[in-house]
Length: 231
Image (tube, rainbow, N blue to C red; front, side, top):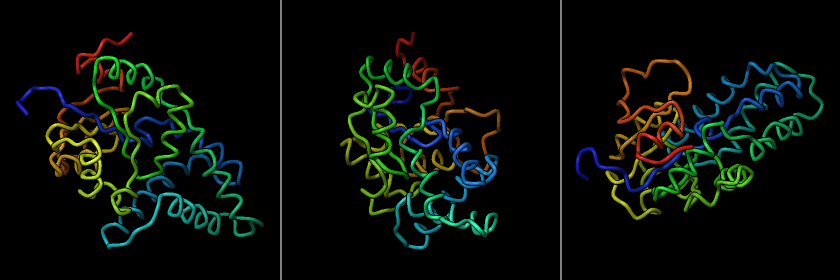
């Protein structure tokens, strides 16, 4: 693809990139854990899922997320009478999460301007679809994918990105991974995809990881950069 040309397909990460996960803090509070635990819990889920992939293991997001919650409950609430129900109370909120405010308008603008859009998550494709349907933008995406289609190998495994490329029937250089996580950007870049980092927090990009081709404040900002009419 010529330098400076637009990508044919935009591959969107979902958790934290499209979805606002902050309401899960209230669910943690409901089961007696501090809401401030949310970032550490989610980071631990990603760590364990990625570590399993590196070791050759296979599992799904829900299993790892449940195990991480049970671990936290055992450490911080050893008297919890029904830890399984407590964990499910938190995980049951995932399909009900809102999108970040910039997402619906940005997605609609990208779709209207002819960009092909798909999602690729370490979580569940069904959950991605449910969240986007609630916001009225699921039909803007031609496919909702998860890493179970890549043999359970979590991003940033190259197999996960290859699954998305196969589903979209495009070469790596014709696709752009859009994510808020630098490790996802790095993995996609190493797999040959172009990349766009959504800088939702005022933090520096890690110097040890491959830089993104583009940076944007949100999906609406990225849409403008790619020539879509927003607003």
